[in-house]
Length: 92
Image 1 (cartoon, rainbow, N blue to C red):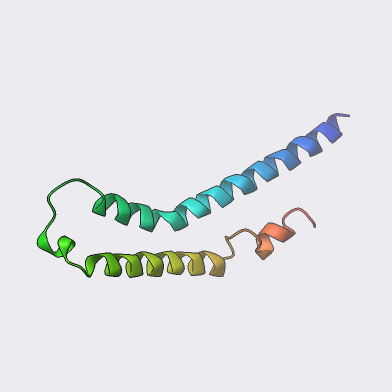
Image 2 (cartoon, rainbow, N blue to C red):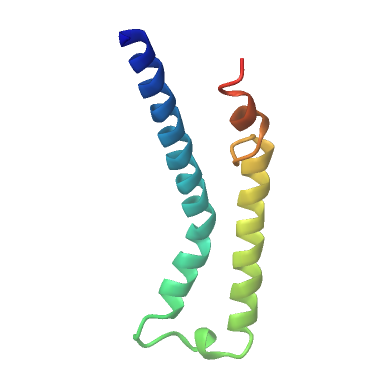
């Protein structure tokens, strides 16, 4: 009976670890947009270049490029959910 309990607790710990890993990776991918929006959303006096019409477009392109690069890099390292390490972890 103790062996069955150990197996059950191990499987619960593995699922918890996978959920934590997924949330960490999603937070990492969202970090660039959070940083830029928090900087541009502050109620302080900005330099003149922040008030120009092209600032929003450039910041959107920059955030999308950095987020896309992060997602590509994490997929390349097989860290994103659904990769080979996520599927094959408990089946062998």
